[in-house]
Length: 256
Image (cartoon, rainbow, N blue to C red; front, side):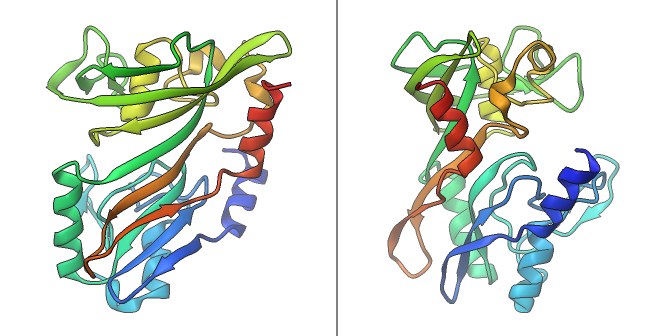
């Protein structure tokens, strides 16, 4: 991320979509880490939460970097990649953490994303059912392709093609993605595995970036749009993080 983009990211704050005694639901900006990773100096949702709700400090479970360094994960029950924007639920107390963590573990949480991908998705609807392991070529990546190493974990993603078209004579597709499991980098690895990587993905689509117009986007084209789950209060609620303006403009470019 260049200096100008970093400055813009640091100026943006999460938008609160919902809040009660147990949780805060936010629209996480692109470029923000969910929690510190031991490598980047980007702003984190954890820091923001602990300023907004000081009593959330220490809630949850500690995390550790690959080097074994302790990471503050206060209030975190699930995460979004730094490059992914969208809806994220945070907790204020330990009982809320346990209750929501169990829902995510049992795959009872509905999650819906929007993505722009390179190439044409030929099927209107489909399911990507490919186990995910670690990439043999890059330790930062996961892989749903032949040759993945380590433990292969079940990973299932439903998709729906919303639109398909061309921008400057290059084909792209706009898609709804519904992960049925919650593996690290699942959507990015699954789309890469079917040769329709997500636009702007420096980790999984590096082979496309230099050759493509990238829909004139300067970000990863992945947004967590909807989250539906039962709250500690007993209510089932659906939260929607609006699709960012630059993302919608890119989608319109292939609809013209």
